[in-house]
Length: 353
Image 1 (cartoon, one colour):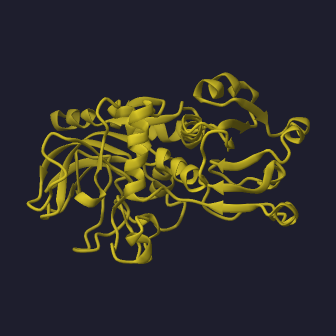
Image 2 (spheres, rainbow, N blue to C red; image 1 turned 45 degrees about the vertical axis):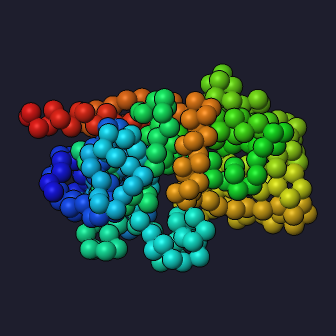
């Protein structure tokens, strides 16, 4: 089927209107009309080939909220008219150990990304949610809780699960002491989710002006990470630190704020760390530095249900698809609170044009 979307044609060109072919739905597929699509920092990285594995044309978008148009003959969980979501994956091998344990994001044979990947059955390239329609295996389609704001729910499918998964894995609950490094798309979701889980929540930031917003989002305490006195006051305090910073940065100052057996989890940055990691606080406090990426499908559904129960959505700024290139430039300057979401109805004006 022919579908209209916005694509990057190379690493150095703006996204522009693009008509491409999606596969015809298989018996286990769900065909979805895209209503909203969140704009993730990784969309920009992929469009500009910052990680070195992009291929073109590339249609980004893996925070997709839509309405079911039709389902394959073997699909029983969804029906036409349902509000659903598609996150960062649309398939995996389904038989390796991680997949068998609901950890498809760690598929040993490689999960199929929503965009910038190849379908494991027919070899066609996958295209994301900056488009009119999307097709996915029903196993990777998620139910959106009734009453949850649909546009605000879009970033939950990446920013939400990326921060929810480590909070759950490290068993955050009532009374847990959690800190979040960075207040952006990921950081603001980490604050909301940790607070809803009952944790004592701190924001580490370099910017004093973020205190009021941080408290509104759930932070009990704000620590200016460049202030040595403030950092010393929380030495040995946190069981878990969620590091959402998307750029190269020094994590050593934060290690001293971990408690015995504490863990700092990197969720925002892909690449090498600078300067060299000091092992002294790790050895002397049995502390850990770990990484985490999104979450499995079952856990993502759990996260959505949790957000439905607590009425948690992302703070968003709605844009038309025609404004995506300007949004990318603003995102590089952290000029958004806290996630852009594309109103896919704006694509309809392209048809008229």
